[in-house]
Length: 182
Image 1 (cartoon, rainbow, N blue to C red):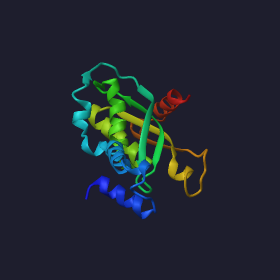
Image 2 (spheres, rainbow, N blue to C red):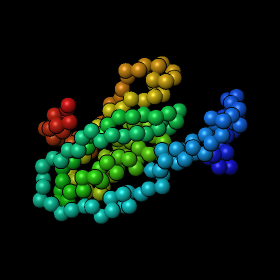
Image 3 (cartoon, rainbow, N blue to C red):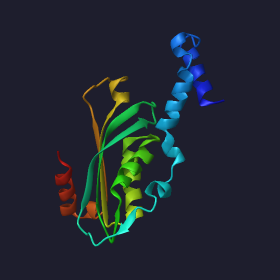
């Protein structure tokens, strides 16, 4: 059974007339949207990075902040939307700037919980760059909290993962936190 057929079945099960004009192509559109929203399953880190790792003498913290992210909670399959801040301390290699956004997108475009998303991003960047420290902070609003359940419109969640020197060295951690503050 295809995703399109599954959406057709869902619509019928909730009581919709699947032959109604406005819904005729909805299963096809919804299937296409779901494939886009979960395209991270079809990507791998080597293709995303695409060799954009460069030798460098840089040894000071590099911060990329306010990377937009869109993901879907694995518990309710509803979106969570936010921003990701990434910091790392290079160890002879730096990663091409656009690759940070691509890495965030690859992992975000999978069914996720925010805590795991931050960890996957951090571990991936540390492995790719060989950096001595990585920090990832994600701030997001979850529609599963806003549209259903407790329906809290102004709630947001912040998660952080600190690895290496970002975890073990309080001054490195404080520098990162100071740099990502608005």
